[in-house]
Image (cartoon, rainbow, N blue to C red; front, side):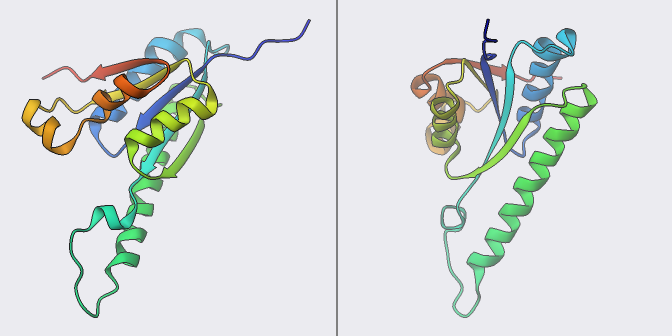
Length: 158
């Protein structure tokens, strides 16, 4: 009899405390209690913005784009390293971690399709209606566009 593959859970992380809280909450509720036989294959995705989307101006004679790109790569590497440390601290050693360049909304929905994910987990920044309208809400977008169950984890107010 062939072994069936585990369902896939994707957790989107960025450099916010809310996303790391969502990752820890997910690990605590779905992975730690079931160690070493986790119920899901865990994939952690960070989207690195493209440099042109990160700068709104250019200074003549200064190569801003390459400096911005280096900074964005460093931030993404730090985010993934912190996610790896959180997983290891919870004895989750088999998570797949990846950095993909692009808009977080599209990257997460694409990852759901690529991995045939069962659940997508994202943190909530807790923006009000006006900030959500101006900045755009990743959690709002993926709840409407991802082709799987979406869990939005909110960090409790202190």
